[in-house]
Image 1 (cartoon, rainbow, N blue to C red):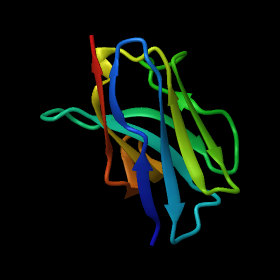
Image 2 (cartoon, rainbow, N blue to C red):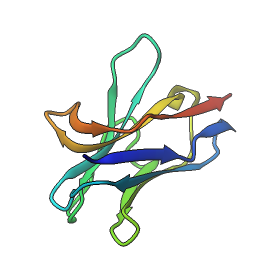
Image 3 (cartoon, rainbow, N blue to C red):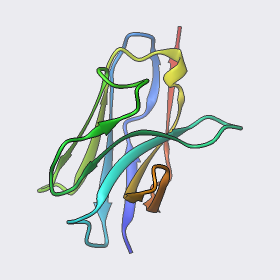
Length: 119
């Protein structure tokens, strides 16, 4: 059973940066696609970024491409999301996911971390 724990969310002003972290434990994810999603209350969960744990090119939602960077540290079993030039529309609960498939589905999810961007 894979366990994911996110951290790094917070309240920032527009234009600021945040780095989210997702620590992975309890299972094998060596061949898993990992990703970040976000959800605003009352709306569907939205894909943000993903990459394969063993490497390869990441993928991004058009709305964050050029501002967000997904990366991982295999030695620390940690997935990151560096978010720059944050905008109010980036405000959401951000979820880490392992075993991403089908665009918005995943085998495992973290509990989420809140990101709020004020104008």
